[in-house]
Amino acid sequence: MFPLKQKHSFAVDVNAKQVIEIDSIGALQSLVWKNDTYILGEGTNTIFTEDFNGQLIINRLSGIEIKESETGWHVYAAAGENWHKLVVKLIGLGIYGSENLALIPGSVGAAPVQNIGAYGVEVATFIDRVEVYDCKLHVQTTLSHEECEFAYRDSIFKRPAHWHWFITGVHFFFPKAWQAVLGYPDLASLASDATAEQIMSHVIKIRQQKLPDPARVPNAGSFFKNPVIPQADCQRLQADFPGIPVFLQANGECKLAAAWLIDKAGLKSLSVGGAAVHERQALVLVNRNNASGADILSLAEHIQTNVRERYGVELEPEVRLLNDYGLIYS
Ligand code: EPU
Image 1 (spheres, rainbow, N blue to C red):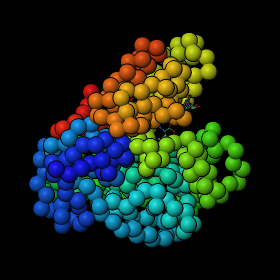
Image 2 (cartoon, helix red, strand yellow):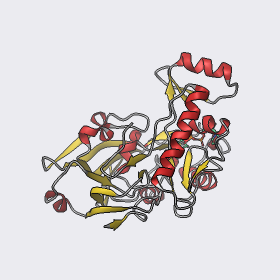
Image 3 (spheres, rainbow, N blue to C red):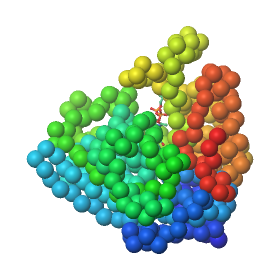
């Protein structure tokens, strides 16, 4: 049995039957894919709720290559590289674009899966193509930006039909024609001519103030996605709950702030066993004191039920929850 407490940032004290660390494509070639195989990066968006009886494979591929062209920089990063270290390296080299995405925990390979995003920027903007290794057919393929089907915290890599795709690396393109993205309320205090370095420092500061450091208070970032609902439902909510934050989407739908819904429902002080709602960011659940998987699932369900009854809105998990066999999908 392999302890998983140090392998995922929610730090539930459970074990895995088998763990294989992949540090070369060669190691993938001898892998036998099973229905209970799960691919893990740094484990910052995955929560093991019980002992995992399947085969866990961990992405440890490393390497970064940067090529300059007339219009921008082509950056290739192997999937096992740390995302934040890549951001710091790029900004240090004068390659701008990812500054709003600083300090997001996790690996480069996990970035396209979730289409990580923060402060008005999503990583998909800079992804040119993604290299994958098909663990069933044992072939390598490349997916173009379009083929990745990026959407809000979503991509083709999340579909069950593609869980056997092991992301080996990501090709990014950062144009030289850089423009700061400063529209998010948390960045309002920055000057309109803020540099990428200043934006990165500011983002790091806000994240350190608002979000708990997983190394000290185990957590997996936002536990739920921000719900996107039809405009008619949104108008009903605006009438019933004046001041509710609403972000109009390009397709006319409305994105709500799940943190606000949870907070204003009075759920910020809620805890079940060792699992609790974080006191500064209601969208983040934390492992305050040796939480069990059952504590986490019960706390999440309690929040979902409350939010459904109060606002008529469904909260969907943003984290990936695993039981003894694999991903739990409700
Ligand atoms: N709010 C509350 N109570 C709280 C926290 C926030 O009422 O306890 C309100 C805020 O005042 C604001 C709104 O809720 O009006 C949104 O809050 P915030 O700007 O902190 O962002 P968020 O929507 O909760 C999203 C991402 C974060 C990302 C931030 C910043 C998702 C699921 N979460 O959170 O991403 O860092 O925006 O861009 O989209 C993650 O995915 O793990 C993550 C942390």
